[in-house]
Image 1 (cartoon, one colour):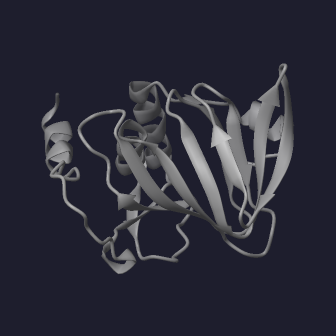
Image 2 (cartoon, rainbow, N blue to C red; image 1 turned 135 degrees about the horizontal axis):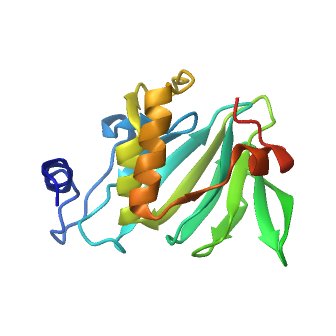
Length: 183
């Protein structure tokens, strides 16, 4: 384990059994290359421990096609989002709105796009390992702020971090074929 990883592990949520209140204003918000995440239950040392996130996809922003071994569940709190799914080798978009629940099993290709004029806000449950991935690629921002387009260095960091976590990313051509522009 590198020194950076050890430092990151020291900042993980305590495993002490007590009830606690999470105040949204106290939660750090990270820009993850367009969308933002806010940890309500921070990642823990155990890779499979639950991590709960409030995720926001601004208007006109997409989450490119990707795949990972973490289970993810999304409860749409507000807004309208399109979810890319794949069945029998064919991709298609599913519309989801406020009150809808999206389950993404381990290893499933998926992506998101917000083609509306309003942000999409989701409550996301996943594993601590995927939460740590978001921490590594994220950049602190003020809640509600829109990030700038990522620099080439930040994109390179994403690719390196994705490889280290076993997180597969579709090519720009695969994304374009599904209707996701990476520009």
